[in-house]
Length: 323
Image 1 (cartoon, rainbow, N blue to C red):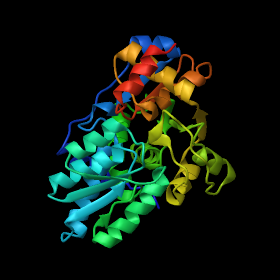
Image 2 (cartoon, rainbow, N blue to C red):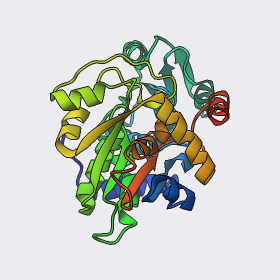
Image 3 (spheres, helix red, strand yellow):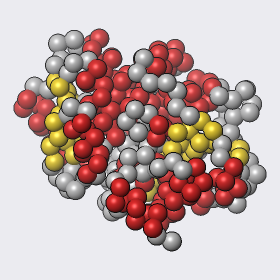
């Protein structure tokens, strides 16, 4: 898979803009002080579904309607935010949506998908098992299977990075951006927007130390399956890397770092204390990585993707209550 060019990204941005305005992008004095750096936060927790994934769903469904106008039903698998994206975008096109999630998935993300009109099915112990079931069920029902990684999803997600990089004058963009990695659409989209805008920013990928498949694969140069045990960063709970995403990541991303659940919890707490924004585990992972590398980036200009805020209330209460 090659990166989409500037024209493709601009057309995707136009589709996204029909459904939502640009998300906020700003610095917070307390967060700057905590990190010892100039920190620009892109607030994708402020989309209509509380996460960046909405952008990909909007562009994917728009392209699907043009390619296959006879499709009436779609299906996908998710840990939550991708499913909300598909349900939201499917409804805009009059399509029914069925979403498969693993058992024990976020209660509030499940409720949000149902509220958006999706049929929800729980199957398997992790995302990979849910995805395999969704593929089989889509064939059985004759529904269109929406993948979790696709060039249309990447184009849509890249709209937030086009907004991000477009905020800065040439040569004034951050020296580095920290980007969480789930299945790969977010970080591949960042690479596409960087190329399209000519930004000279270093891309630092962030994985959960309890879901290290992409970091291990990045270092080995080939897909490596790894067990998932994160209890907090479910949006990064990838057991099997996507080969197309890995190829782009290895070509475009400068480095990948890992953060554990304790570091993620600290970052969730810090974001609320310093900005009063709610971040889910994966949404706070970029800040967790910056705090881990605080000395390296002291006094420099950096960017963070606060990629989502969909955390269950009881989980967030425990994070805020812990010290």
